[in-house]
Image 1: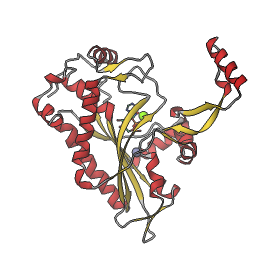
Image 2: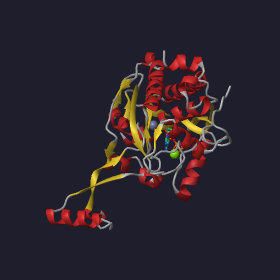
Image 3: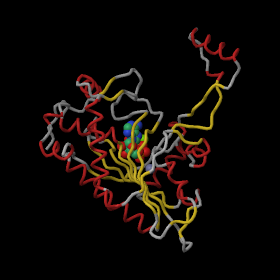
Image 4: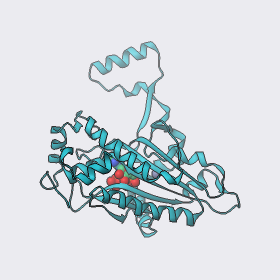
Length: 307
Ligand code: ATP
Ligand code: ZN
Ligand code: MG
């Protein structure tokens, strides 16, 4: 099924090939290349396909900016779990004199961040975060289903084209009775696999864990795996032996419903789960599998995306 135009799984060769085809536009910043028009076209068409496959589910669409309240990051436990990934927004609150000093220091090639102070904002690490506070209070019978798409930031600089510092996620978020939430997650896992396989991708699913920080994090990762709370759909993109996650499914159980006072009308426990397609990663999986010349992609794949 696979028709590699790129030999082997060499991330650097893949990066260079993507750049040579104008699919990505190197900026010199690790994990923050630009995207050419063909890359964007594939990304938008894949996102439309996902939305179309979910059209009958009646998800409420919500749109948020790619920044989030600092208090939200604190409340989510992000500083304990993923401090290595955070992006904090700082700005300048000083006087005219201090502004000139700061600019002079920058011009002289010296460090100037001591002139900055923390703002109320941080960069958004996952598209679903702003959605949970929207559920606060009593849920309607049957719970809720929301979809959102956003730019996400994670400080994990890499030369490897699938590990970006800034990328887009299409997420679906479900809140409701525990069994309904689990069943929703299971059916989406099947749907996601079918959708990706229909595009000729050698996709598989597996239990996974989040990259929890530090020694305590190892235990959290183990427990997350044992409880089968996180699944990923993976496709080989930059490695044959360590396939890349293109879609993740997280079952948070009561983690967010307790933090944001989300409850069901009958007083029983509510759970949340979310799933997120890494949109750039899906594009890269398609390019790796079918080659960098979109005109040469299999007709069935082209027909699905460009119908
Ligand atoms: P990984 O294990 O590869 O770091 P993750 O477990 O951190 O992925 P999630 O936090 O579940 O991923 O994010 C949801 C989806 O967002 C992933 O399935 C992936 O497709 C995408 N994603 C995550 N991190 C990145 C990144 N640094 N660059 C591009 N896409 C990413
Ligand atoms: Zn999520
Ligand atoms: Mg990660």
